[in-house]
Image (cartoon, rainbow, N blue to C red; front, side, top):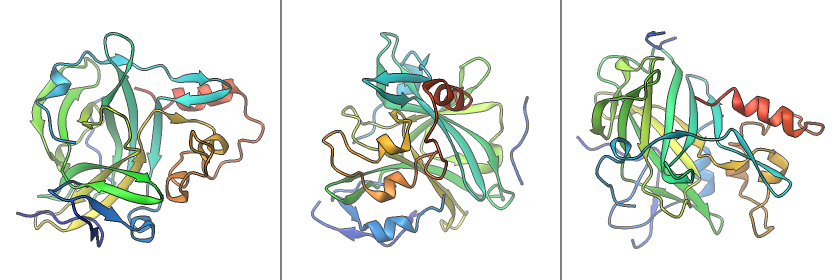
Length: 251
């Protein structure tokens, strides 16, 4: 079965509780910002990296100069809620090729028989949104022990998702250039049931700081809108408040 992309695309060359109630071919895939905005309100595959990488709990908040950098966040949509976290290698460095995610809620319509979940990655560069059309590799693990209990696959059976499980997602992004993880729920017929975009940690925790790229240019609005504090007044927040906010989303 062919799983189609979640929007019209423009091509150039190239504990234990059940939860209820994106993409690269031989060409580069370019989405207009307008098309990509409709997706959410709110590299080549490797062998199972999740089973060979030592996953160490990432620090909650770090300081990059005077700016707060977070390693965890929570994204809440109309019918889907999930936490995402960066992970570290045994050397203590952030592993750009791997993130972990856990679902807090999936609406009953999402866990219908035959529904599956796939993950994709996308980025904005030069005011264009580029989406990798290859589904990312996923390994399921037990949250309480960190033990991988399901081999690498490219989809999850939605009805099997529980709050006691986490998932390692292989980003295949050594340079750390992709900014967003997309979770897409498909029906048994391959139709898109739901989708949600989540900023990939690490990123600047203050939305005012995140509004600008490292070169001082304005960050694309489509990315700014995905910041977990985009609609929160954080004018008087301290580093401690940021730490408390983001640490509550780490796992």
